[in-house]
Amino acid sequence: MLKVEGLHTYYGRAHILADVGLEVAQGEVVVLLGRNGAGKSTTLKSIIGLVPPAEGRISFRGTSIAGRQPYEIARLGLGYVPEERRIFTELTVDENLEVGRRSANGTTPVWTPDRLFVLFPNLARMRERAGSQMSGGEQQMLTIARTLMGNPACLLLDEPSEGLAPVIVEQMADTILELKREGMTVLLSEQNLRFAHAVADRALIIEKGRIRFAGTMAELMANEAVRTQYLRL
Image (tube, rainbow, N blue to C red; front, side, top):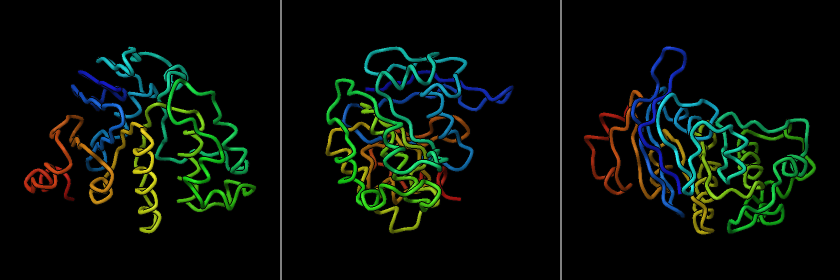
């Protein structure tokens, strides 16, 4: 579904990503783990085209997307949920969803507001509420729901559990697992190892812009030395 090879990304003269490579198979949930500043968000932004990489190859469903504009990549079926929860705060839940609506791109399932309100029952109870009157967790759910209205084949989630109350984190984990059951492919960045363990099939660890570990989630949880070296604060 998604393949990245030899990715190098800079902010000015700062070399942020160095030879990053990863693969995500159809229907798989892969987590990119690392400390703050390790390069997780930059990896997702490089894939979606918000921070164009200087070098490297990115293919999505067999099509090269490196160097394309973000809107072109989105039209191919790659959805991106930023960490900043960029909803339209002056618009209602229903209106935010309409902004994200795109016709199906040969993907299953096809998302509609009614299906999304089953997935996010909290949003169903506040369809006419403005985004500015929602909690951080509700805004995060709305951001994901709005992205799903574009009917993506693969979802990039940047720190979906960041700053959320524990009960909302559990709901977010349940949501990702339900998306997986629906056949959605997901690449997410995370710092919360417990959350990642609950949802992911495979894990990658990034440190100082380089991939330091790649394996199944079970292999990571069994490797205390790797977790201590790269994930503990």
